[in-house]
Length: 441
Image (cartoon, rainbow, N blue to C red):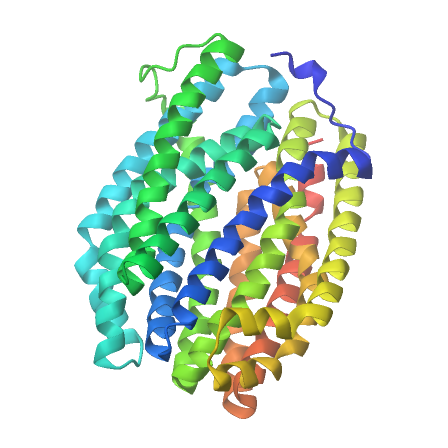
């Protein structure tokens, strides 16, 4: 595989073409959430949707907190790929696999503590709490497989093989939907069935693509992946620094979404349930817009690896413009089809009625959020992890303070205004640190 055959000078058309496979892969992820929400939202009782909302929010916070297994992999792999250092790419993957195994084991051992914290943190009925516990105790065992998928996804983004990374996510999502639907609709396993579906889909996908990746590396890199010479202090320190910064950044980000769930639960289970529904629209838009961010990560890292300032700046300009334009298209789609989608997700009339009154927020957030999503991808590809950590700290702190005030005086609409301001804060803080990337070029 010759890195010189890969272009670091990308027009809008080239970025868009590279992002197409990621669009479909990313679309599959929120679609799973929509299906799971629909499965719970049509069981006739709010407690199933409320329990799934809290449990998935907590698990998402825990798992996404270790998204450095993907993000850190992309930046390092892309820059090593630009230099043509295949052996070090392979060692980077293996180091991250070892880290993933250790972290997953610790999380599983701490499951009882996680469940206890949820019980003390959220205001729910005993029936809802039992459903939450059921989900957590099943889903937690999928973490080793989900971490493996993170690393492999990051690897293929880093070498600009977006078609393979997208196929990985599509297979995971399809299996998840098939298993969850079967367990819930055919076996009536409700929350347990949704968690079990994710567990089985994760392990099947991880095994298939681990074997595929081993053969891919042998064939294209002419390197045999072996667990030797992995403990190199300088390499481990660099990996630890990058991963720790991303860990802090992602923990803060996922906590902000957990905070939304928390404030929603304080307003009542109806608002908790409708915020779960509405967040599916935000997540759908985010994963769609992230297609540009994901594809840009590899391009940016490649350009920095080759010290190509012109190509880097062109990529930044074109990707941000594409992302904003796509955000506008998403908003128009939501404006036209919002009610129809809500009616498919839930048959509970009170939830439909309240959701309709929040359509405004769902429509205006995507184009405004496009800037922070794209800047995230640029900073990750450049491995400027200290900056994204600091930017996120400022943004989340501001968001929490403002959300307390706005929710107190404006209820759930105040909470959604806070979310809108949060994405604006993220864009402004990242833009402030942008010049630091240019020092690498």
